[in-house]
Amino acid sequence: MRDSVTPHGASTTVLAFDFGETRIGVAVGDTAVGIAHPLTTIAAADRQRRFAAIAALIEEWRPTQLVVGLPAHLDAAAPVPPSGGAEHEMARLARKFATQLSGRFGLPVQFVDERLTSVAAEASLAAAGVAARKRKLHIDQVAAQEILQDYFDTAMRAARAVSGS
Image (tube, rainbow, N blue to C red; front, side, top):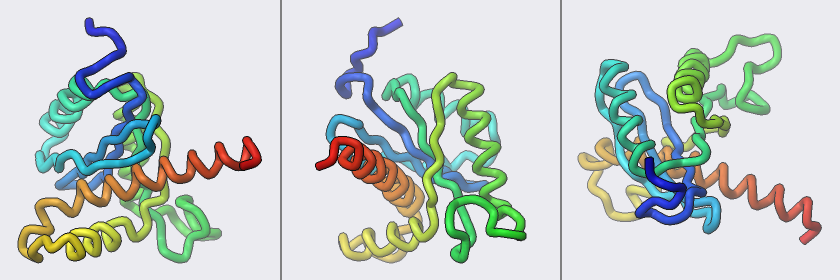
């Protein structure tokens, strides 16, 4: 077994997932710098191949934390069911996916509200000059990047609030 230092630096790595039934976008970042990067899109339709791909990423990157985007209805105040309403079906599936991640890999999983991350990812790709026909190849991993960046930004705001700066 390798020690906690990987080819990618100290073990403060976080992997984030934009869960979908046919594709899962993955992003990576380090808590020391708080910058997320798109990593890959897992396009395997069956669960066994998806988790094999995730296991390979976890082996390579050695994250200490996992983050999963939690879909919510646009009118919800938080990524939980709106008052009196049912949870978004994809949110239920994302929670199940997060439970499976935690159980299989023994890593903590945090949720991040992922409303409009695909819209932001599409806009980022368009602004970067990526042709419309090629955006589909990258949209999920860029959405995962948006999710992870939100996680880092929220953590930094909380740290500043605690320190009073």
